[in-house]
Length: 260
Image (cartoon, rainbow, N blue to C red; front, side, top):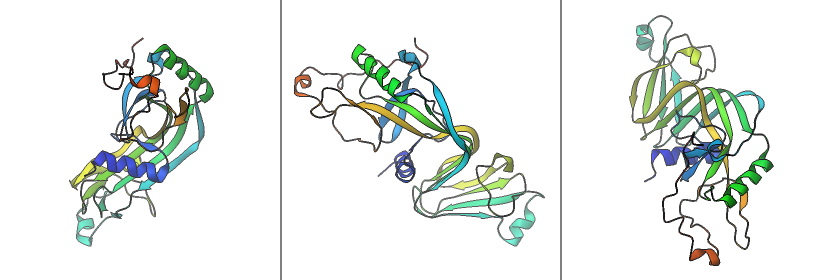
């Protein structure tokens, strides 16, 4: 059975083309270096700790991003007349109901893209690091992040899950966003909801990464975007390397963030 992390990260990647940060309440930085466990990025080091310098650039204006996975998600504000009457003045309840196991909701506001400015130079620097023996071919590097002014993430453990929220301010007429920090949303109850992140600020819910990957019939690995996870794909070894390469059998001494 797929884990909560597997269901969420796979669904987000399939629908958006981005990888999802896990855990959703954590942040990633451009230049973070790590390994992929399925679709989950596990930080190991960073480019600066490996002696690789780069510049960042922001592009595009602020925008909202909303994602709802298959399985059915229903958002209702208020409730029965009795329930609404019992609410404190100026407050409203919001209920989010999930129809299927692993159903997920991601709502963000004020998203901006940040990426490595000079990708060809980064590729050259990583290739040189590989030749110096300080780059592991199992690594990927975060080259783009989507930074949200605020974000809400909800992931259901089971069908029929629900979470009830209370807004500290009156909801605006028409559509509203669960990522709006100005609403003062707080959790009043939850059932079978494994991940609850409500209107957190400064998160990086989405990212893209690149890697060096060995190719058949070529002595040089390709520098490419990380696409689908390859949890069962064996490392490609060339005949001359297969007998002597033990790097996949022994722990790699990962440089840690901040090491120089």
